[in-house]
Image (cartoon, rainbow, N blue to C red):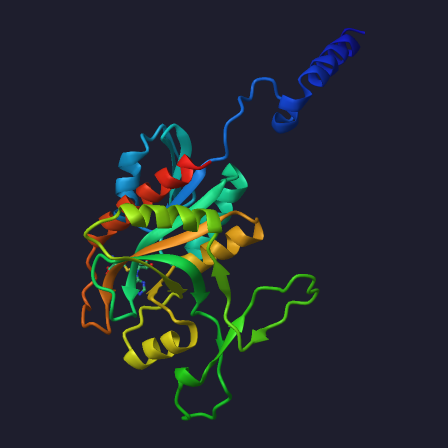
Length: 285
Ligand code: SAH
């Protein structure tokens, strides 16, 4: 009888507060909190300035991944250190989406320039990202060598409605940036002085490529501006969950320009630019 009464009281309260409770699942104690922004960088040098900026309240460690919670302009933000490479980036993105339901994802970091117009410290806003990781080779006999420029690109992402997974040959996996995040990056670009900031194509694979012919091949086919190791897998997972995504990279090396040495100091510039993008994005929410 007492139990019934409690249920009746709770049901009545739920009905009165219906508009609010739809969002909270009728948990009276859960305050309404906006979905956080997720800021990703692979390694410490790519997240340390972000961590300094968000006034970290607590950090979750899940396996090898850390997720630091804080805020920017009063808005909840999570900084995620994804670790390097595709598998790490995809796993960190999936974990963050499942646990924290981010409103949008900004993936930032260093990258190797392919475009000779880009130098140390220049920033590329990833209008799109293309996978440089999936290829099918023509058959060759033993001692036939290996000829990467003859490989055909593949897209492993299923098309809408596709039942069986097919290898889509002749096309690479590509993702376009979210228009809202891109617009915020363009507004941030307008504020940036003394540094080149351009739109471009980010190419991703677990590969550090220093072969000029291969670089030319990727530029010819996909107009790749910079190569790195995380953007596409993070974008791929984000796209499955329909979460707005943007990649931003700073040039830390550039083989075609002979800038072979990786310069870790460039990571500061991309974090500072990302903070500007976040301010612009939040300002229009
Ligand atoms: N500490 C490393 C440098 C990092 S390189 C060293 O010992 O040299 C790997 C990271 O930098 C990856 O997260 C990748 O996204 C990025 N990166 C920078 N330049 C790159 C390049 N030319 N090719 C591939 N990844 C690059």
